[in-house]
Length: 77
Image (tube, rainbow, N blue to C red):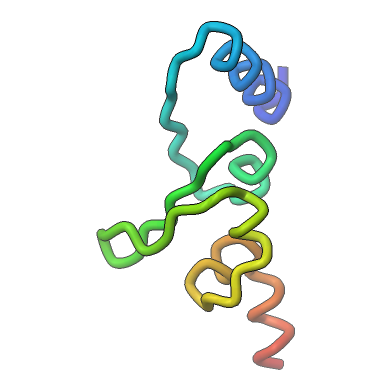
């Protein structure tokens, strides 16, 4: 079972059984796919908390560099 399939299954179980969970990852694609809320840590502190939809639209450079690092690379070129 691949990780994304596992995470979707875990999200469904979480909703059925009504429990909270914390998933820590550096993989934004997985987090955006299965999370209800995301916290972005920067320099050891919580920088931003929001829904995946808000994170995808964020103008904040720290959030953008996590959610879509390709954006910053193309803007700097």
